[in-house]
Image (tube, rainbow, N blue to C red; front, side, top):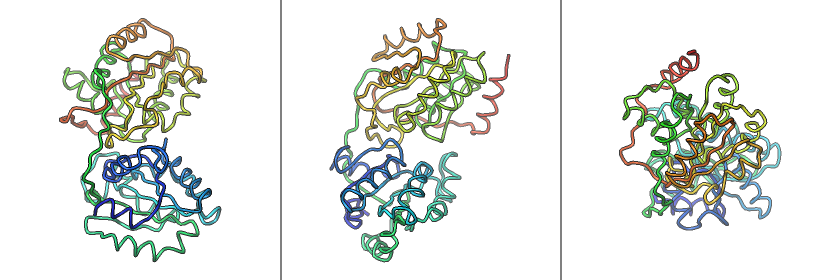
Length: 373
């Protein structure tokens, strides 16, 4: 079904969400037609998107549409259960959820359990659910909405769980952020200059690139923890590892989309202030792993935010030469915590692979590395 027909059948005038690769046609349409302000907001996280739709409804009396990958349902549960539900304010809204890890469809390990529980989890929080696949027609969408009109008006979100390939859109917007320094090259330099550290990498292409850099160099993966799920939480994982193992330098390789999702984590990082923590933020201004739509960090100086939060040493690098110099300073036993923002171009190699080891192998090898004297 063409995404234009899908949205016309739903009939709303406000959209908010977090991008998803399965929902790329929807994301591309919204960006191409509305940009990222006014009728459409790329939210910090999925709960934020639900709250934006709630605000739209309170101000106008009209429902909004919230889109997300199913991995983001957890972030949305709090406002859906304690704000918009029929037992509280009864706010009308629509959800569009990309179904990663759909049972019977091959996917990455972090999506498998989430895929199994997606429909039951949505129903548990009171959603009325319709599965959208390649055979779904606009009139099916209209019929579902009409049948569940009363439920929607009481605050039970009408939810469309979208299978891979169900929606189409003919235009591919240009999300490119130019620059000479790529994320992969930045990670190469970070791992070269800070070798011997324990590395924690964030969800998405950063972890995939870290894995392939080790393969290319014939290096062990034992020092790397690849946070394949739980977007935005690698920083808290790294923080507590640094606290528990003050004898180890811990390097977090973070992304702007992930940091924005749970930016409040910078405050406990500053409060706890482990001297062995290096927080490396790779800021390319886009959600690179799920289609390339801009993040709310695009054009922002996140290092200034880190400084305002009270992190001890804050740096920024805008090219390879600056990055090498900053890393030399850090490698000279600069006391942490250190926050290093690296500005890079968007995009990744088209032949970028995925880790060939299992998450269980990863955690077993990494914990063994941490416990070595």
